[in-house]
Length: 297
Image (cartoon, rainbow, N blue to C red; front, side, top):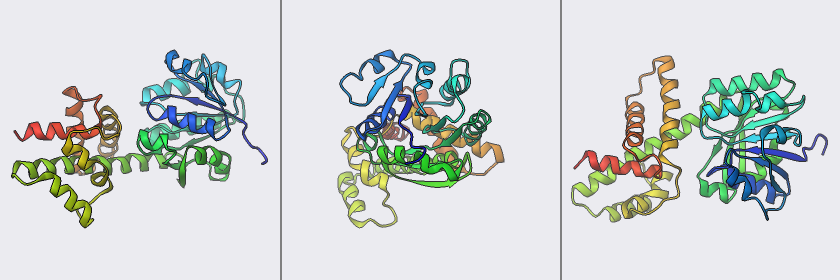
């Protein structure tokens, strides 16, 4: 294939990044990976096509494209914009894709910054859980230069089950925040309904099975996947609660920016923030149910 990319840099090897990088390597791509934790990088021995490197600068000289999967906007700004980061070392023609959840403004800023140096940048936020990432079952929204999407399609296909191009730079990041917020809203509503069911003395497990069997208006994918685990108090495989709090704060910024009236979303935003403030941040985000239960004792 003309303009095929033979070497890919990967920055950020957390819960999502590590399985995504492994899937790229297992698909036959030559992956050079970096994480701020040297212990993580040291764990690459024995994985074909995946090698670690000691710095971003060392990576940039060896790859034609860089994918990033980072936990917050501070990390993203540091990796892309600070001295020793991607743009400080990038040569003309570098392709970058950020798979993180960021504000549309930051996504657009990265797109402009990369383009000003003769490169191409896409915001390609990833949809799915860490388990989905391990099984290459995630999905991507893509925004940026539409005519060049074919350059990154092989990466996305190796890491997940598909993608959708949604528009100019920043659009995918906006849609990721909105989609995630739907899920977090389902999480809060599910927690409240299950707690109310138990408080009224009904068989909560029976209620869960009824909703899943009926699949009517009260059903959602979140309920289908996680309600039984919530009732049983078992692990559900969702992302961490502090990530949900971070994502909903991005939503709050969007709401505040235009003075949008969204009382239900505002309540969900506040509850996730409170959960982190009360020390639940490292638990799975289904643990927000604990806060709902405490509020109703």
